[in-house]
Image (cartoon, rainbow, N blue to C red; front, side, top):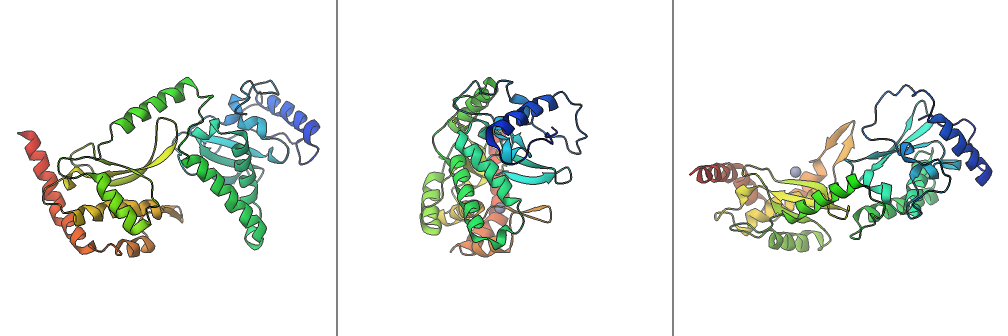
Length: 309
Ligand SMILES: [Zn+2]
């Protein structure tokens, strides 16, 4: 989507009207040469020709992208849950803001926060201006809070997102924290209280597959809110596994919530030095590590065999 050259900062309504007129025209322009094809449809495609949006509760991003935000292109990413990013596109002429698709239904004020954030973080020298840094932190906290909020706001949800939410609801219903030998909810409660001041929020389940690994991921519930999901390998649901051993793997996955992965020269760093150091703070670290290396593979094999008979 090319942005109109005529829309600049200032002069609120008249310029905004002009900008939206130009943007409408640009929909009929030949597609600009895209270096990367967005996975999802840009929000611009959803906008109505009417200047006042049909659904008053949730104004589309496109109708907000005028005035000082006219150079922002909002890309809704269905696979993004709790992160968002912005980058200059096409030789610094426009900002490409990638956000979780679920924010399409976010309230007006939150959408404005996202746009303000995109402009703020792409300014030069923000690091030397404490007020701007503070504003940035404030905006990020607000956005994060919305992404993690327990109450839904999916009023204008489409049929497709309705289906997705129903599927998510079934998925939440299928979570199995209670195993044959161990209840993961108890383990999580103990670890959370002891190592994280009870501050973590997560849902836990035994892995669906027998040989499943232990993982941490971001999932979405039936109301469209993101949550942390910890899945523990079925191999741990074993009578030989003591609470100390089970606590080790739950602690490891909890640490992924406390120390989120970061990007380092294009690579995702999951287990950096800081992570490894904190991992060793677990008081039964060696006992857990030993069983994880030697006991777990055997336990998983036994599970497979008993299933076959
Ligand atoms: Zn890990």
